[in-house]
Image (cartoon, rainbow, N blue to C red):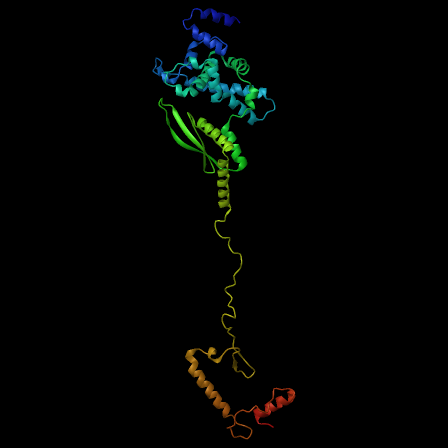
Length: 371
């Protein structure tokens, strides 16, 4: 209380008392080092430099304020939602410190009206307000410490400006929702960069398009990749909900893709064993091995005579056969004439005519001239 009373007395003697009053209405404290807050409200487009020639703007304070906000909001969310899991706490913190939330706070609290810029950045107001809010938190931390920042967020922001419970259970991450929908339906989702450049004021600009199974979805533009993809995701979700022909095209494309993936690239190899090394008897005459009978004569079974000899010995073989026939004709007979051929007319193959002993006796008699 005493500090606030002394600050009020000093205020009457300051030429910039209007800024002091405005900051008190915003943060609930009178600044001690006004230069920190002046720098927090100075955009880089002003191009102001200090005595050493270094640029003076709110970028460094913005970096510090961003880290302080994460810590403070994380602390608040952790204590406000006991028992909740890490994913829920992270998502809730992200909603409270995301760019859209900070931009709305800066506008509602009057921070945006205090920003010093070159006046040509109206198209980039989505950055100006949120960045200045973070820089202001960084200045408050350096001026009065962590406890003052915590009190500012609890008493000024979360109790008067934001309903933390509504924020926690409200889904605003359209990209996350689109990705979750794609995973549940097992469809391929990509974000295609259409263009990247700068606007007339030199601010970065991005344009992204959501593509599901090759079907073009919504297109979003923004001053960051995240912002443009969020917009593209939101428009794609609306397109899926309002245009049945689009969702039909998505699932038709998915069916074609999965069908192609399921088709075999090549024929399945045959597992049948082929015994092609075995020569079939029906394809080539079986070559019988020669053997000798009881009379020591060479015998070739189941083969014609012309197949048993090679062509180069054919003539000689015929001469040998003729000579052998002549010998059989000149074999001496029982009467000693030597001109009679070997006669087996008395030998019958019919066992009914003669017994086995008689057949053998007749054969011996014919062969050796015995009666």
